[in-house]
Length: 477
Image (cartoon, rainbow, N blue to C red; front, top):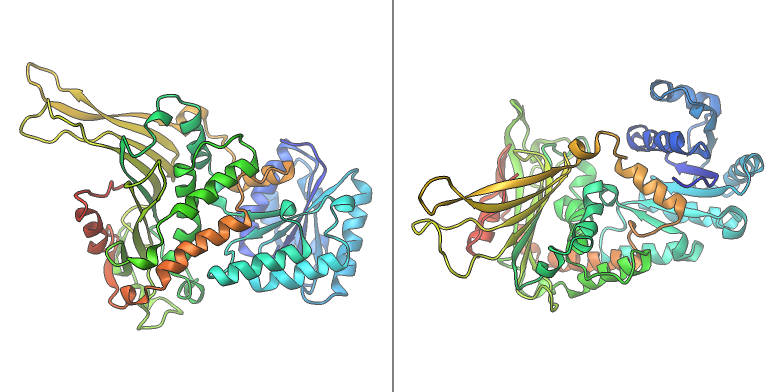
């Protein structure tokens, strides 16, 4: 952990994200580096004491290591220029108390507030690298389509340099996802096989058992395609498919990720037959009856917004030509989990199990809820026969390394403190991901007769057909 004196200035500090994710991550960083302090910013008329009282139960749940003394608050009306005079005074006061303080602005805010906040920070000189060593962090979504993403990037660059910008996707802070590159580039028996000569297909799955959870108004304008596939799943795809970077530096890693997005087939030309949509109906989750999507609060009764999407894409480059990548994500599924399955090609000649087909070899990367990596391969069954059965060799992250693994936000905050942008999206990467999703959205007619699947199931039948047409099947969690 870096020992740089760091002040995190969190806009939206009275929201749920602060309590559920940010505060615990700041505290964990503080236990490893006592040079961390937090300045909450919000519209509510609070002071340091009342802000701490509002979060007293949470703050008292932490070990008493003096973290409370490093928590502060400043009221700011986001669009009022005068309001930032007091914010600057507060930051300058804290800067006097801590030598060589770097200031990290964290915008846990709706995107429409980014512009007034950034303009006011710049107007008051709080964007200065020389004075404050300023960095700025943005929570997703980064736009709602390609044009809005481009406009957002243009807006950001009016106030800050790209080297100061960190677009956060908490998935990239997960230990299992960081292991993608290690798995490939630190093991000589994987990389030679990582191409269309040996790999038959790759499946990326992100399933949730929850529904819209009171976010109906937002979710119905987004859907699974924008909410999960555009960021989380495509980010995983880019790490799995990228070429070896020249170094592990941010520029080289992000260069290779963008090349993957650029090589993804232009889907709007022949989208039909490559995608399946679904929307959850009523059903049963963990023994509890749950509502259908259209019966959720804030959802129109005739909504055709997808809560499930499965997609087949191809990467048109030398390494991956002809290898299908199958991506799927859904809500109210039978089981929660995020996995990547690399399925290797069938053997050219069958020597065993003359009456049955030998299972293909698979590399299975479990990202959540529990991180693990397993290899599925075939062994001979005991006896005088020539039968084989699949077995699994597994590395369990928790079992091997113990429970003290940093949470995703803590990992990402540490990278921001260090100034390493490797785990954060660059503006061209964001725009390329939206280019892919925009091309899908253009085929609106494919959603008009959306398939309803029961909550607690494996999803719509159309997703199964997507692979059946290719002579394949999903690897279920």
